Amino acid sequence: MFDFHILLFLFPAGLYFCFKRLTDATIFIVMYGLTSMYFAGVMVRLILVATPAVCLISAIAASATVKNLTQVVRAKSQAGQSGSSKGTSTTKGSSKGVIDNSQPFQKNGAMALLLGAFYLLSRYAIHCTWVTSEAYSSPSIVLAARGAHGNRVIFDDYREAYFWLRQNTPPDAKVMSWWDYGYQITAMGNRTVIVDNNTWNNTHIATVGRAMSSYEDEAYDIMRSLDVDYVLVVFGGVTGYSSDDINKFLWMVRIGGGVFPVIKEPDYLVNGEYRVDKGAAPKMLNCLMYKLSYYRFGELTTEYGKPPGYDRARGVEIGNKDIKLEYLEEAFTTQNWIVRIYKVKPPKNRW
Image 1 (cartoon, rainbow, N blue to C red):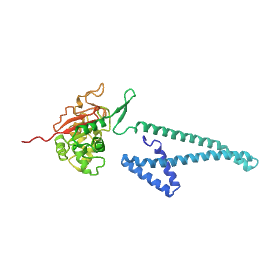
Image 2 (tube, one colour; image 1 turned 135 degrees about the vertical axis):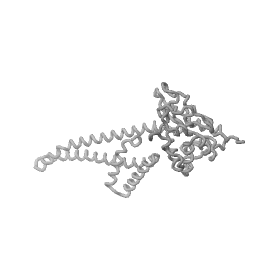
Image 3 (tube, rainbow, N blue to C red; image 1 turned 45 degrees about the vertical axis):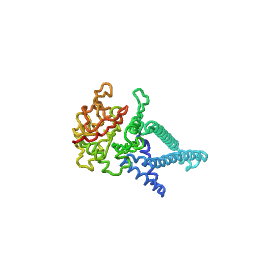
Image 4 (cartoon, one colour; image 1 turned 60 degrees about the vertical axis):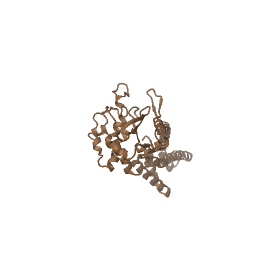
């Protein structure tokens, strides 16, 4: 509803009008609309593919509706004028005059429907303008929000982190993160990543998911096998940014568990519920992703009247505040804690 607005209702109507007049063009439009909507339902990012089809089919419905209502208004007006000019001297004319008594009501109804249609279309235009200016105007690496007093607040943590990577890490350093940020790290940080948005090898992505969902010592062995130098996580507990790695973590577990049976999703849930507070599962409280996201967070007060370690994105106090790292060390955390970078320690000398 947020993206399509009234098009959710116009789209089925447009399909109806297309089926009424089946031609090669309308058959193509119908197939395009139905297949794109199906795949958009399967994968939300494909809504970009469905948008042109939805707009086109909805426009057919709006055009046909306005055209039909306009014809009703014009036809009744012409019929009324012709009836008054011919008079009602004959029986046939008098019966026609009786029928024409309902014409003003039909005309008024058509006019009301026309006004309603134009009102809804104008509201749709206003909604699209607002969504474009507010929700989709900021690039994904520059976040915008409204402050307590209604002022616009800009979070530039992504660029801050990528600049730090480019300036403070060796040129051949390898960075492990979830695949969402692979392109950004490569383009803006100029560093090699383990997985990115174009990684088709599901086993490779599952290996990163397994590392993130394992205990630190187990994850360390995986990272050493991948030759990882730094680990980057996105965390929104300070700012309330909900699209962080903690909220994506269950997908890391599911993808990792799909390839490596040792990772089991129920181990991270409590009564089927995903939690990060004191009631969270022990596996969840001690996995690598949890430790890297909440390291030193238990000492921080994020909101007035809330205890230290209050996660603003989840609205709870975290369950593990005494986090210690053995195989990784904090290298850099951005101003608003949105991006956190950790360095993988070299293996200890066994001699």
